[in-house]
Image (cartoon, rainbow, N blue to C red; front, side, top):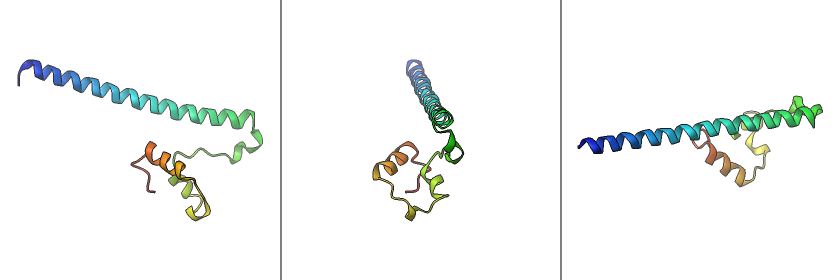
Length: 91
């Protein structure tokens, strides 16, 4: 390999790593925004049900509390959960 090709590969690795890091930061930010929005809504608009509302990060956490045969979830909900978190989804 020539020195130029080694530099090109190193630059590409740095760029890809930077893009992955930015995506992870955006994902973390969006998760925090959802939780803050839920907290705000339950605190100021529905304070009487705040104790009953829980934020669950995925469908499998819901199934830990309610059996799947008791729920009728639309297909788009299951599809979205699998797209957002494919490694942890078991549906």
